[in-house]
Length: 364
Ligand SMILES: *Cc1c(COP(=O)(O)O)cnc(C)c1O
Image: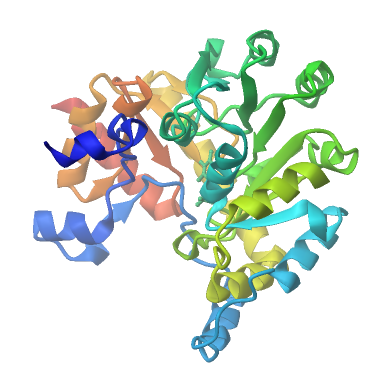
């Protein structure tokens, strides 16, 4: 009997997550130097890690023989203080992706359902599949989450509703008013999850942490991977009302957030300067891309995050052509957007090179 016959069917059903193509791998395949390649495929910070975080992480290496603080005391207290919540409301994750998994561990099984938008971040679907839950996809006209329709989709099997705000890969935002109406309609057996990985990039971010303070069944997810530039370290967190946070704490591994990442995140939390520079660079780049697509008559989704979704005809072909010239973007077939690519905003020179290479890819 093939070993798959002994395996958990939900795992067999999974289609593995396809990350942005790494620079090293691309360099090997193309026979290029890594320095010649630019990666605008995973919404990483083009300015690099927070300098304060780098210093703190170097110092933390000296204690590399010791297990991390499993309770994450320093980092969790600093996060709690920043958001004016109690430390008990803060759960650390190995990236905010792990918070998604902890929520699924806590609430999902084959008799339950998870609701997300049609073009939502793909990890929600992967996790629902992994736990054998029903995945309910709600249409998002104009690539914007329709929170009314998402609330309408809730039934007695629903446990989790994921709202990525802004959403990846669309870069669109739902308003405070829409969120307010949605949270008001939330039945007692459902947790609303606000995935706010791009929160720092917003000019006027909706306030969802207030629902945590009010003790609603809500989890707000944040990450150090994007604006703070610590994607390699895998550190993020969830802010949740007491009972929800308590479940997530039980579901996690003892040392899920490593010590180097905790030290880096603590320093990054206080590095407002790096975030401000990052946001400024991003705003310039976003404007450039929006204007360039406008000028070329390319359909795109106006974004408030650090990436833009643009329609190019054949997304896979354009991805391949750009790759050959050393520019890595993200093809969107996995999101049922085969005609589109998603481009992360880079430094000013990376953005210009990306546009040149895109123009050549579209010309031939
Ligand atoms: C990038 C991203 C995350 C962050 O993932 P980490 O695991 O924290 O690196 C979470 N949600 C969305 C929608 C994202 O785009």
